[in-house]
Image (cartoon, rainbow, N blue to C red; front, side, top):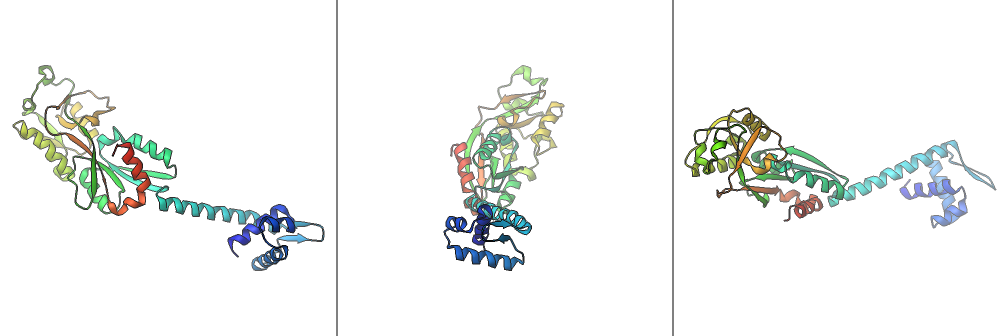
Length: 293
């Protein structure tokens, strides 16, 4: 039994006429009759009642028509789905990101992927830079977005956006009234930053900002969660330095000062593993278009 036999059976079940069915499947009527007889023998059931004037389905034939159609539909779906997955137009794409990306461009990226590739499911994971390097290398991620990464040699990357750093303070912080023009004014403040283990490259960048201002930050709280850091700032437990984009959409009792006169900038970077690049090429090309690469 093959798919063509099932298709021919369904055509005969629809027309209930051997001559019409044989014409529509481009097969001689005697050959179609033999094929249907062989099908019945292989199943062990009579599918059609025949006489000189009429052809009709038996109860077994009615059931088998429905089952055969479902089988063909499922096979066609599987074939099309397999083809889409092979072309990168179906399946899933696993995306890692840091907080500032989800506050800025990531929602638009997901929306466009959904619109252009409705059969692609996006799996999102908020990770620090080190976790992204690891999961990309182990092919647990397909693509990721980091800030100021030190990209390992086994990964590919491209900077697609530069932003400024901001120093974030409680809205009633006393230095806000003084409107300091130099970061050195915050030398005696308590800082809230990620631990080096969770993002050494990002932490080094922030530390270099402070060192250029003549001090090393006194870190009293470590957290890799931007939301947690901002909440701690709001509670008056310290200050932090963040990409300006991280504050988008926030409604907290905090203020920020742009550090636009320093050489360090926030470099939003896309990373991927070239071993999985071809598998997700259509989606990757779409993402590159959206971030103007």
